[in-house]
Length: 561
Image 1 (cartoon, rainbow, N blue to C red):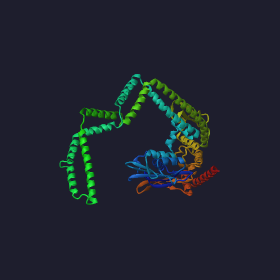
Image 2: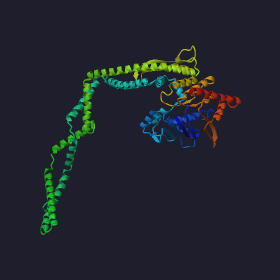
Image 3: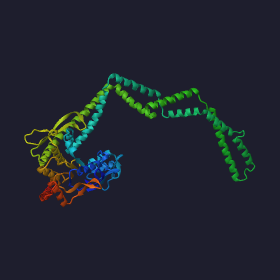
Image 4: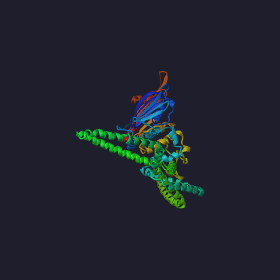
């Protein structure tokens, strides 16, 4: 449910705050006062595309904030997926629009416009003139019916989508097989070349690293030999370290055995001499073996370059190349056994199509069953809205191809007068009729899609008198189970308000601003009097306003019984 709206610097709005209740929230005001601006700000906060010209002149940004209460677990799960906390069961949506860009946050977490709209779609539905026009789009009729239908149809739709996805994959693969024999042979030849090249390469794990090390040593052989030779000379007997060891022992012998510490020095020095001697011998052996076969080096270099060429073509390392090989081998075998593979795939495709076809038939049967209930309830709701002699039916056609939603095409047909034949909805309904038809449809499907807040704009278009009262009654009934927010010009609808706001336009500091005021009951009477009496608030209009409110209260009381 929508709890709170805060708007700043949005077109004619300076700064307004509104607190909504459950039941029916009514917004009234003079034409051009800013009711549509207010609705636009809500749409903007919920992710609608918004131009920067909505920023109030002279300001740097526009800001809209909405607070919703959590109505069901589906909303909570979606927020959890987006890693948004809602511990106190309140969701705060904020959107700021600047000349450069707009930003959106949900409970303080920055979100993309796509995620914002996804969340918004679970909290609120807005019905304006554009949405009424959607009724004229026959492609929307199947969506409207499905949103009304029960859990069994929803489960069938889910199964059908899964079956369609599986069928589509196989169909795509089968379509891909329909290539000419010459092209297929070229593919076989190319795959054979790749496979043969990898097989003959006989790659081994670690081979490339070993070759790299061998080549690195060969390139630095002269430098290594020079360093080791110099070191060996420093350690030699001819004035080198070994000579220094001999002189050290000679000096120590003059005091040998005098103390344990001196004896320890001799032992340590002997160990050091042995270590240096071992290092010297190892260096000499290494130098003796430090030679490279030029032909072998050339072969190693060629092998190393070849392996790296393979890595560039087929993968970063031996494991990648082997994986590439296995994949291409499977493709090669499939092409070589083309007819056998095609026959096998054809059987799989036939089985998938049979499964999909069965589900589509069940889906059609369920839709027709739901359609009978839907048309009956919509027809009754239309009668409540002063379409006394209406007939409302759904005609089903079969799509030529499968879709994720089955093969059904649904079209709404209506007759609003006795003796008139059924005609497509798009050929019959006027703007005022469309708004009432939408209200009827929403009434019968209320609550099925788990959205608990509905906003209606221009639901009173083209109606008056008794029809207006009928619409008022229907909104009152709808608001028993859902939160309804309605912008209206009609006193009959305004009288049904549980929460009434007046939208007005004033001059402030040389600028025109839109303001909102929550009305007490006596103020609602004054506003209804204005709506009834036009420019002059007569006593008769005031009495009529009180009577309308009294009738509305009685109706709401009767609805609750």
